[in-house]
Image 1: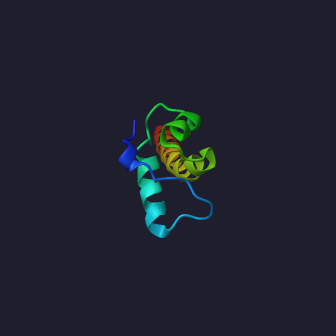
Image 2 (image 1 turned 60 degrees about the vertical axis):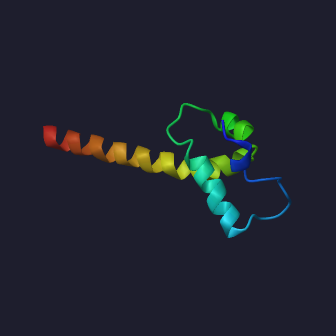
Length: 79
């Protein structure tokens, strides 16, 4: 669980500053690879689920593409 001091602070309307965005991104990326649903991460961090998806989705997509690439290379070598 994230300590209270690590949370991005009280949510306010509008777009976060660049500094806040970097902090939010690092908090969310710390959950990468853990067996947690986006809903659970959102509940634990107090952030919107769409924000969680925005930062984690590209990480999982890149990992999936890398796995596909390695799989295809193995197939080509077997032929």
